Length: 253
Ligand SMILES: Nc1nc2c(ncn2[C@@H]2O[C@H](COP(=O)(O)OP(=O)(O)OP(=O)(O)O)[C@@H](O)[C@H]2O)c(=O)[nH]1
Ligand SMILES: O=C(O)[C@H](O)COP(=O)(O)O
Image (cartoon, rainbow, N blue to C red; front, side, top):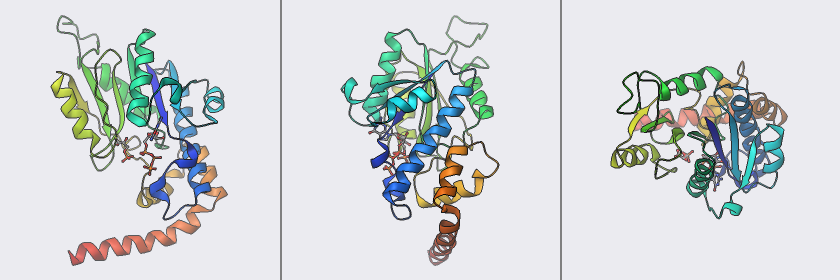
């Protein structure tokens, strides 16, 4: 199985963190999180190779650093996340790659154990087996395996056969959209709950969760950016008042 990592240009990434991070900090964090994801994918035996699809100017060099392949999003005539994913998957299909794991770059807490679990869910236990595959040997032609964000709304990771005519709808409420798309074309869809994969860093509250969970994790690139910009010292103060405001609002409602 290949992994496909779509990446927005770092300079434009993580806009929703602008209330708490400067542009330089957002770019550095976006890059560091992507590096942590790339490192986990590179080290996992189930992942044959990684394809990075991006317009990020340093993308080719980043890919090289992690033994990954790079394709320029504009070179593929793609624009935006869904077109980039679609174009990347098509390239893999044309090369005869069977299965692809589309993984987002803002998931610094993914782990080898979670990748194991996800791959097992995709291939294992007869899930997605061919109709004539009574042995359940793990054929995955009709399987769609998804991991949502913790809110159960977005799609942080998706595994499918590259030959499937999947309509990618990454963006708000993409989990429901992907389940609908799967139902329309008769895929056997499964959502796997995984705390690391579920933790995408979008909003300031996600950053607080990350700060609490980073220590002891393997996300050394993210840890280094957190230290470089003293994010824990700065944000945990903002965080406590954010939590207080949320608590008061919930009490008032
Ligand atoms: N190739 C490509 N990847 C994208 C694009 N937009 C988002 N991504 C990637 O898709 C994944 C999920 O993106 P988001 O969580 O929306 O991240 P983001 O766009 O940096 O965040 P915001 O600016 O706050 O919306 C990350 O790996 C992003 O780098 C895009 O236009 N092209
Ligand atoms: O489908 C998704 O979840 C998006 O690609 C990413 O969602 P986000 O913008 O909530 O991270």
